[in-house]
Amino acid sequence: MIRHPKNKNKVKLKALDRGTKTVIAASAAVGVHRSTWYRWKGQEAVIKSAAEDAPAKFYTHRSTEMYIGNPSLEKKFLDWIVEMRKNRYLCVSMECLLLMLGLYDPERVKTRSRNWNMSFIRRFLKRNRLSIRRITHKGRTKRPDMELVANAFSRSIQHAIEEDGILSSERGDAKPAAVFNMDQTAVYIGIAGNRTIDFVGNATVDVQQGSEINGFRASVFLTASATGLKLPPLIVFAGIPGGPVSQEVWSPAFGSPEAEHTVQKKAFCNKAVMMEWIELV
Image 1 (cartoon, rainbow, N blue to C red):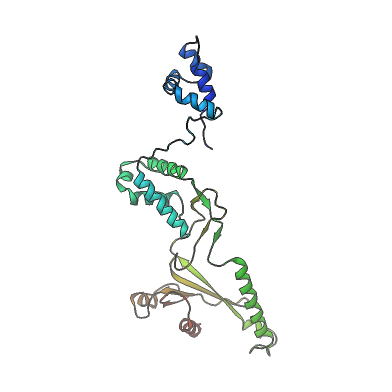
Image 2 (tube, rainbow, N blue to C red):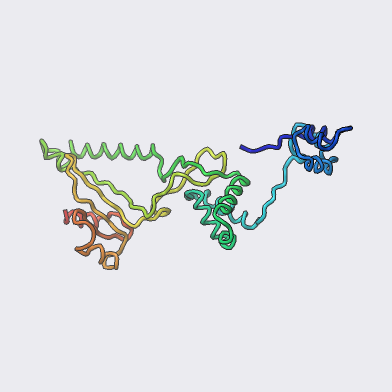
C-alpha cells in the first residue's frame, strides 16, 4: 500500500497563515515539526498555487519527479525484464534478480550488503510497477487441444484391439496382457518454479517450457501392460553412440540393474532406440 503524506495542500496553506501563533504552535496544530513548517514557508508561493488548483491533493506537483541514482543500471535491468517476458522466459524469484544485478553492476554488489542489494531490487520493482507473480499457464499446447488428441488416440487403439487388429481374435486375459502403454518423462537439470517477474495488472502470466528452453539431458520411458505388469524402465541419455557418454552408459557397472540405459542424440525414443529396448526386455 502506498504511503501518503497526511497534510493536504489546503492544510499546509492554513498552517502558513498562523496569525499571532508562534511557529511551534502552528506546527503542532497540523501535527508536524517546526522544521517542516519552515520548509513549507520557503515553498509558500507554490503551495498557495497548488491549494487553489488541487486543495485535496498531498503534493504540490501533479507528478512527483522520481530520483534514480544509476539510470544506466535501471535501464539495463528493465530492458532485461521486458525482453524476458516478451519471450515468455522464466525468472524464478528475487534471487534471480540478485544474480542479474551482480552481472550488470558487480562492483556495487560486492561493496554493498545483501540487505542493501535486496532493498534496491524492491525499490526498482516499485518504481517500474513490477511484482513477483504466480504463473497461470505453463506449456506449449493448450489443454483442450491435448484432450482432443488423447481422445482420438484412445478411440483408434480401442478400434485396433477390438475390431481390426491382431488382437481382435484373442479372448480372455491374453488380450489385455498384450496391450502396453509407454509414457515419456523428461528429466530436467533443475525444477522450474511457479513464480516469475511480470508487470502489475497483467491478467495472465505464462512462460514457455520445452526442450528448446529448458534443455534436459535424459528421458525416462515407463511401460506397463493393461493387466498392470510393469516392464523395466528405459533411460535414454543425450549422447552419440560411440561417444564418451555412450561408453559410460553402456558400461555394465553403470546405473541400476533394474533399468535399461542407452543414448540418443536428443535423448528421445526413435525407431532404433525402441527396437533396442524391445530386444533387451
